[in-house]
Image 1 (cartoon, one colour):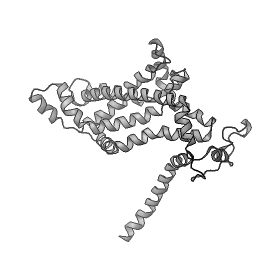
Image 2 (cartoon, one colour):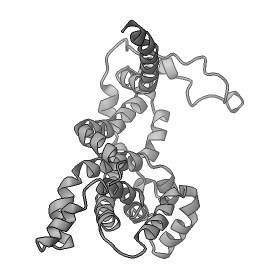
Image 3 (tube, rainbow, N blue to C red):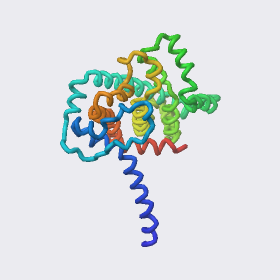
Image 4 (cartoon, rainbow, N blue to C red):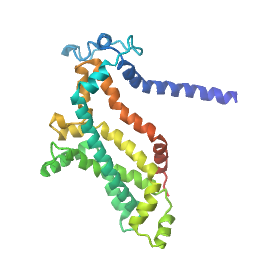
Length: 291
């Protein structure tokens, strides 16, 4: 017993240190968001104002603090009540991400059912070809997507971001792997009772896919909530861009506003994960099972 404890204890301590290190940016953002602007100016006043010849030098003047001298909510008031641009960009992001998640979930669920449960010639080959699009980095498909969006007249519109997101291959791959864990005997039994594919999908598969769909929604939300390259290239109008691009410019106005805005920006992702954590874990686990 003592030997096992001596072996586990160093590993536990190492994992705890890694966990604290990973949480440190969130903790610093959270605590600094409640500091007064004067205190933040004293800690980070030189950030963004360094001469060109000094850029890249160690920032020895930065004073990282975890406990504010005075608790202040002034920066939250400025972000939520006095910064209409921030709220406008927030709803830009919410609208685009909601459309992508809804569209990709529907398309992925239907395509995954076809690839997992329907019997047709060349099914595995077509799935591998479809999967190749997921393996390509964004830079490879950038020019074709740009040309297609230009031909369709979608440049500088939300459609240039939403439509490629709806038909992305990741959701199909994940839900197909999840469906493979559902016995095919359920489909056969339903067919013997006279049920068609629509009824089988809606009545049997969809209820069983709830953990997989929940996991997919969380992963899609994190991915597209933080998107930068797509809107930077396809959306030239700054007022049509999502919050992920506007957030990088807020620290120039005031350090405290930047911390508060970043914390508000992270809140939807944290709340969504906490709400659907059990479904997320179950969905990810079952998506790796082949049946």
